[in-house]
Amino acid sequence: MEYKPPTQPLCELYSLRMRKIWAEACAMNDLSYFVTASQQRAQTYKDFTEACIFEIGMMRIRARTNMTNMMAGLMMTGMDNIVAAAQGPGARSYWVDGHGGRHATSTGAEGANLLRAGMTTSKMNMGGMQHVA
Image 1 (cartoon, rainbow, N blue to C red):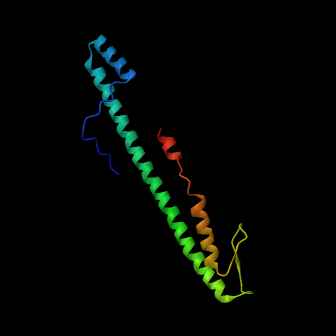
Image 2 (image 1 turned 135 degrees about the vertical axis):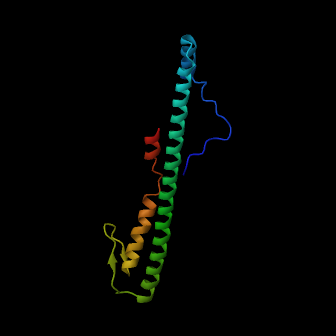
């Protein structure tokens, strides 16, 4: 996403730091000192906003991927259950690696893995937002 500046002006110059810079600029009779500090603050705000927009977009992508994994896994394990019911007892089973679940088809085993992956990674990863801050 591209950064879009606000339609109304935002006054972020009221902070203690900016008031101190204003006082220093007045004492030095140098308005350019204050203007430069204000421009740097505006650029920092723009950079921060763009980084936040990017990270929120990445969180949406991860959430959609998890949702897709869960839905695909659910459909695949459902198909596997139908096959297992049709085969009856004594049919060939595939093991799901590391989880010990038996499935009538390799598709069912893969579906269980997808479902588990979608469910176990459904927590929001906030690492990117911590990096931005």
